[in-house]
Structure formats: structure tokens, C-alpha cells
Image 1 (cartoon, rainbow, N blue to C red):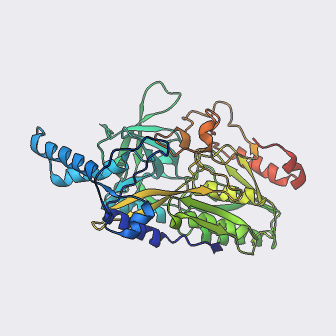
Image 2: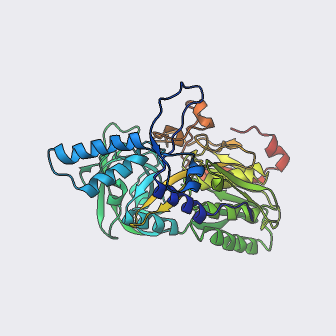
Image 3: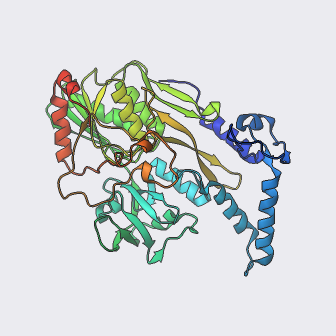
Length: 447
């Protein structure tokens, strides 16, 4: 795999230096009238000042200190200095995109555990909204959340009878807990007149992110439910087993990415590389040069050119969209299903000296054809419709999230919402598409 330098540790170092330098970005519209002179102080690190084109705005700092002092002196009850500063730091991220957030030490450790696929909780991918409520992006396969009936688009408004509020540091922390303990979630679901309660027994979430089986002689099926550190290795191992079961060669493969919320970009890149002989996989572009990267394939297709169909839906997000876009743009696979979620941004985890971390959006993803996934998603070549009467959840996409980064999909109101496709009937439809001659399938218009 060829990679133009995207070095997470180097990017983290640049961002950490920016934190030390206290150098927020200040921009002015080119056609705006000249602003009156404002006193500024040089940033502590010249390199960071160059990278961010910024200086410390003393007028804004004075305003902050004035408000801080007023709260300390006049608020009706005493306020702890640490609590005030913590609120101020969280406020820096509050009006950014929905994926940038502050993690306290325990939450940062939990985030890392989830990336490894081993933690205690209910097993659900969520988004915290500005009002503190939790929007379900997708429950993880065979998790306590999935078994309890939570669906993509559900809105969690209370946990164990306590209403979620904007003041909660990390609303999701209340979902974690000892295996065997029970949490009661108050849920709002589109199509239901009233909120209702769902009891979920927490468990040890050990995500087997890859499962596989033979659909028919010669035709394999691989389900990828998340992208974790070991996902690519598991994919290659199980794909090898399917090939062996077929006498050394598969006639075709269905890759199921439905309701896969994403995960580690490197895992998705490695899987794409395993199926490509050549070509670009994905590129990233940000405001600083070190955020820019390009991932390319190396020779060696584990399927020796056998056809591939990728099955996606509205819950397929982030790394799932990267994989689907890479295989489709390189003419290696056809994409069937429903329009994907549309999360086309890169987050970098910035550790702080006290053990806390900041998760900051630093770049956008682009498919090999140069298209942005952000707020648009992957439009399938063949659109599959949900079974009539089976859709009872909200149609949530990146473009419906508050404060989302703008993308190509923002100019297509109402057209960006895909459907969650549940059940084995869609696997059968993907298999039928896989069996079509390549020329005939290519002639069919995309959805």
C-alpha cells in the first residue's frame, strides 16, 4: 500500500503545539471593510503561527476574563475554577461540527476500547445532539442494543428516568456499566406517537467485526460490522477460507456493509488494497499540509478479479463509505442498496497532558474519482427499497445533523436520506446482482 505521508503522531504534535500556543484561527472575508486595529500577541511557537496563520486575540481574551471574573464574583453560588475552565474548553468545540468533542480521561479510554472492539456497555453507535439527547446511528450486530430492539434513527431522551441535558459532559457514559446491569432508555421513534421505554441489559461487547459464509457454491458472503484494529486481518483470513471451500477460486463475493458505522480508516484501506491491483483508494484534505494524504493500492488481488458487490444502506458511514467508494470508483465492485450516511470527515485524537483528549475534525475524505462523501454519501449503482411497512425509524443522515460540515449533498434537499435495509432478502438481491454479466450490470442506471 502506497501512502503519501499522513503521520497521525506528527499531526497530533502540530495540534498539541497549537494548543500550547493558544492560537485560535482568525479569518476575515476578503471583501469585508477593513477592521479597526486590534491588539494581538505573537503565538508562542512561530511554526504553529505559520501553520494556522493566526495570532492570539487579546481583546477576545480580555472579554473572556471579564466574564470569568463576573461569574466567579457574582454568581448566586460558588463556582469551582476547574469546572469553569472545563466548561470554557468544551465551549471551544461546541459550535464546531458534531464529530469534534472533548473527552475526559475515562471517556478517552472508553473511546480507545471501542476502537479495539472490547468494552462494557450496550453496543450502539450514537451521536450526541446539542440538547444532550442521543441519536442512534446504528446498533452493533448482535449487541444488547440490537437485541433490545433499538433502531437507527431512534432518539434517546432519558436514561434511567433522568432527562438528558446540554450540561451533561458525556451523555453516552451513562450507557456504559457493569455487564449484567440494566439501563432503561426513554426513546422517541418516528411513527410512534409517544416516547417509550426500552430496558437493555449491559454486556461485555466483544465485536466480531467480520463474519462469513457461502451463499451458494462458488459465491461467498462477508459481513463487516465495524472497522477495528484486527478487521482487515480477519477479512483476509475468512476470505481465504471461503476461497478454499470453493476449490481455490470464488466466482463472486458479496461484502455486506449495512449499518456499519465505520471505525479505523486504516482497516478500510487495507481491505480495499486486498481486492485491488492498482489505483487510488482514498485521499484526505485538510487546512494544514500534514492532513493531506493519499492511499494507493499495491499489486495483489486476493480474488483474482472475481466480481464483487458491496451492499450498503443509510447506516453505512465513514470507513464503510471509503471502502465502497474505493471499490466502485476503481471499477472493482458494484454498490447496491440505499444511499449511505454521508460522514466524509477525518477526526484526529489529540491527547492532553492531564489524560483528557480532544477529538478534532481535521480533514475531509475524497473517493478515487475526487468526489467528497461529506453530507452526500455513496449513491448506489442499484437502489434497493425497504419492504413495505418495515420502516419505522427516522431517516437520519450526516446532512440532518446540527452543525454538520457542508458538502455536495447540501444542495440536494430531501434527496440525501437513504433507508435502513434489514433482513436477508437484501443479501439475496445482492447475490442476484452479483450473478449478472458485468456488461449487463454496467448498463443498468444507478439509483
